[in-house]
Picture 1: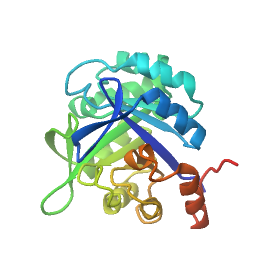
Picture 2: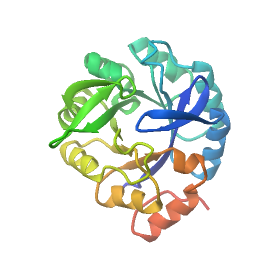
Picture 3: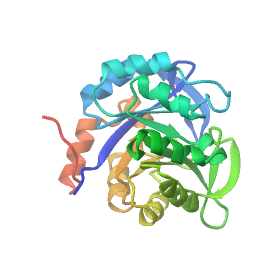
Amino acid sequence: MLTKRIIPCLDVDKGRVVKGKMFQNITDVNDPVELAKFYNKEGADELVFYDITASNEERNIFLDVVEKIAEEIDIPFTVGGGIREISDFTAVLKAGANKVSINSAAVKNPKLIAEAALKFGSQCVVLSIDAKKKENEGWTVYINGGRVNTGLDVIEWAVQGEKLGAGELVINSIDADGVKKGYDVELMRQISENVRIPVVASGGAGKKEDFLDVFKNGNADAALAASVFHYGEIKIGELKQYLYENGVMVRRTE
């Protein structure tokens, strides 16, 4: 059985880590390099860096910050935000990222997934999907930081993303983001049942039980969280001990 991964997420705007609720009301948290160093020591399995306004502002990602973080950590590092073409993949990987996350650009140009997978390998290509629940049933894909409704069905897009060559999916629940009332377990479960690649749950972590729930009932391979880690509400070491005691395989450090 593969171990489940715990992944802190650094949402970065103007060079600072920020956090909001449902992609709104953004507030300043900390310096991304300092937080990255902290999580590296705390026992995080991986680290994710999202430049949350790069796509909407149609600008390139903060590569200098990516380089500084990469120098300070020795865990897998995923970078996303403002990735629009293959040259962006090259630049981010050269800056020290292990994986590149694409979201808006993949919806606008699905061939980008296939091109990137062919050039760098599927293990480098992460398809990030921002999902919002429909009024009746199912979920819709949003892009540009949750600002634009694409009309695409989330499950169908996840399946297509895998076929195109994505090696991993990060599923962000807009409804649950920052609310701390738990992950959208049903969404994660449905996606996990329809794809074979790893699924990372994102949005909604508020307590240790939420992680256990999404691993056991949502079949997620990894759980991503931000504010509960940033504000010290949950310590990664204590979370992993709790998960281990409740039958979830995790990588633990002595």
